[in-house]
Image (cartoon, rainbow, N blue to C red; front, side, top):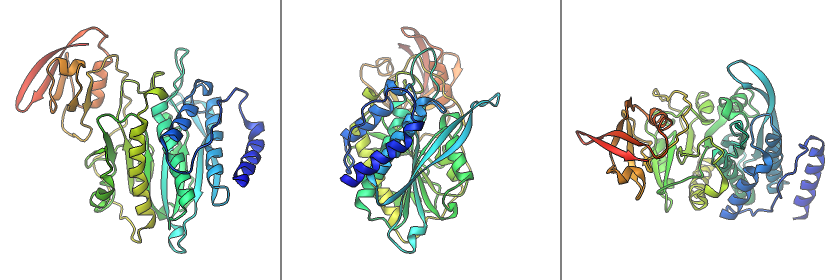
Length: 410
């Protein structure tokens, strides 16, 4: 459309003085519908080597912000309001030094109902990555170009249909990897009335769906929420695993939850490329992303239009923030993230991978790796950070009432 092109040119001209002096990848056009090709376009741009990572305060941070802003502007030149919220963060959190500027990109699509347009549904995800190390680039394709691309695609779709009663607020947060700082800044400096936020949906690491599994957190954060969500969780080729009664505290929805706002968190799981330079776009499950986005779109549409408000419910059990260790080896299994007992329960094993080859079965609970007692997923990852490739490890699993010792060759 001519008006969209004109606004994009004005936008780029206004940002020219602030753009980093590096070569940026080609910006390809996208459609208003949510497509696999569009997901590839966004993720390949955001996780390209040219951006040199999207760590807070870097040139890649600025390029990513400019890209997200342009996508929002192009999708809603006459329907929405786009703004960037600046905030400062410490790159060295422990020493409280190296303060840098980063951003939250916010896109608003005003609702069509005279009464409900003053209420909000927030859809967000962080765009930043962990800092580069050892001369390699942390491109962060899954963490979290995947969630950022889904935020953009949902914005484009709802801008095109324009049939929502409540106002939709789309956010891309900076500084998440430094301690959820972008979302924390927003809820402490809100641009909307937080008391009128009906729901916050967080998309963080939604690009590596395996065995059709996607984890869903937050269903306990509102009364009767799980039963109301159920009709929208029946998407073909998706097995939704609810994360139980606790609230996951290591992603941006948590700051909204602490403001008594019902939240949802979509997540396809930790993998061997987590926080590593190997988290690249060619490993993304784009078909899986399309299925997840279909589900999220239905949920957002429902709660953007239903007349009654969700009633917030406090959740007593909260997971403490921990930093997963970087695993050197992997069993080739899919953990059951809904399991809340001691150890790590195996949802399914994969053929020709170390776990299944050693005799591990679906439903086994890993309780010990070498001499390390496994109490949760973090101890599990810590154990595998200590085992070298090609080594053999003794792993104890609980199978029913029996403890079974397996010798696993990596």
